[in-house]
Length: 114
Image 1 (spheres, rainbow, N blue to C red):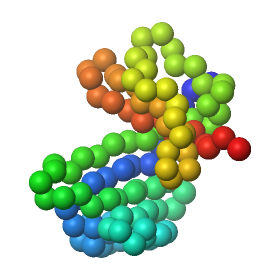
Image 2: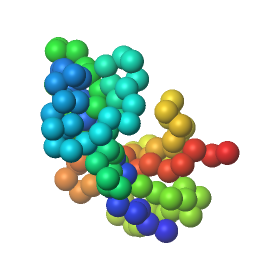
Image 3: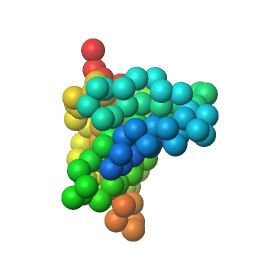
Image 4: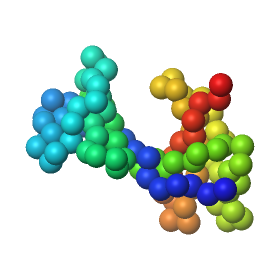
């Protein structure tokens, strides 16, 4: 089994409110706010955008998350470097990190185990 496209974009910002308003101005709707300067927005059936505020002392980052529907059936092909195997997250999924040939890290997200 392979990945099934982009699940989400995780975006860090120095100002949660301004970033959320920016995406709302592009047609995204706020699905929920965590109450601690982060939240999830979505536009239609596409990937969601999760925005989290980070301190001004840290450079804001961004990462794309690829969907894996069945962790047990997923096998990365030869040449795909696994940085971390699937692990539980605090937000209810299981994630794996892989590295591409240019050194970029990609997150693969699977549903939590029952």
